[in-house]
Image (cartoon, rainbow, N blue to C red; front, side, top):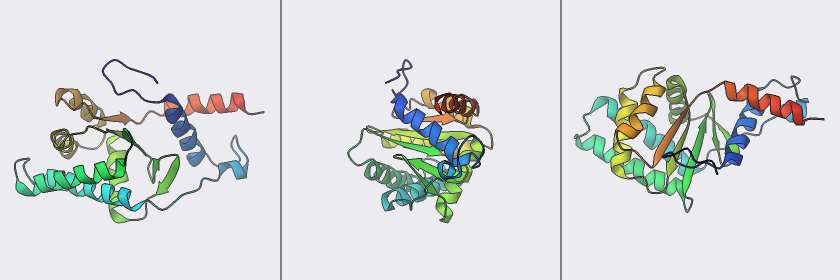
Length: 195
């Protein structure tokens, strides 16, 4: 595990699996790999994740329309919290890797086909957010603050969302920014390891 001070520790193997899988998903076959290696399997999104994605999209929309004290905003946050806990099941955390047209979850890619799913990916990609990490003890207050940050963010302001998390005392949720430098590093490692 890599520990970065007050940040949530992340299993580096999961991060490398995500980085290498993303490279595999977005590298054209024939460029550094065989056509068979370039194929990535996409699976249907599990129903608990469909519910989470839809709840997250609805909560962001409610955050843009209503004040945090409004009853509809609070209802959406409570529903989102329930769906988040359900999607986590018995795990300590839930890692969602976000690409332009796919979600990385538990070692598999899920291609966006439903409207809420596509909206979810487009929104986070436009902000420049590459992943969301929900931790087991995530509170409703933390989710509410996170959604308020997202609802106020504009395209390319993912770094402002990241900066707001500690300021808002959000300790059980973190986000990462898109960093294309990781692709060149992971590609160099993969090229070095290939025969």
